Image 1 (cartoon, rainbow, N blue to C red):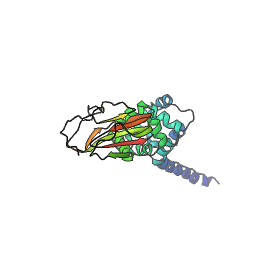
Image 2: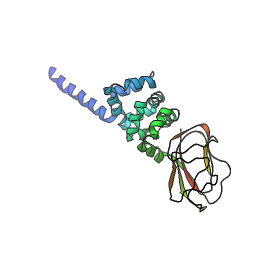
Image 3: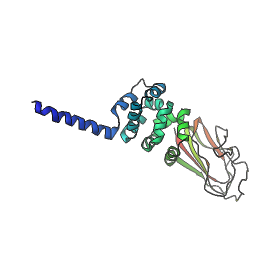
Image 4: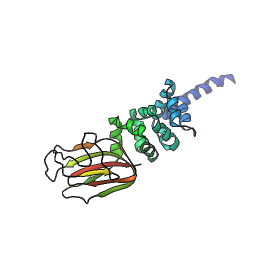
Length: 233
């Protein structure tokens, strides 16, 4: 009966629109979940405006973003593509999925491209900070030198000075440190983690850059109260 064809096609069209609302672009999902996907291939694919739009639609849906994060191969490709990562950090839905996925965080940790993209986005950094484990050294006395906080694979998300129980002056340097693998770095505000500068206007965000901890330690030697936020990755 030919009269049944139009309603059937209409129903198929409605189902397709419903899928897109729930999952984003099926074309992008099919491409992303291909076992042969690579970062360079994804980067090239995303240079086509229609493909970039399809990818953005996919990761803007919770189920689409979760599907991306669930695939180790897909996440390695996304983390290696600067265009894909720019889309990911621009989407709070995608970043929430990344923060909740060990798969995704491991891919991020292993990619300087991904870390650079996240460090350029305050929204992305805040989402990771909200999901992070937050260790606080209470202060009031010196820790051992050094104290190992964690060992393994992690992302160091943020360092904050919480209080100043030692009552040191602003700008005082007394040898406190936080280090990755025994090595300090220059923090984003120009201070060195080999000698944390004390602050009196608190809380103070000391370092707000995502940093990879690759099969090594986060260690500290502290007298005042600091918070160290990190994610297993």
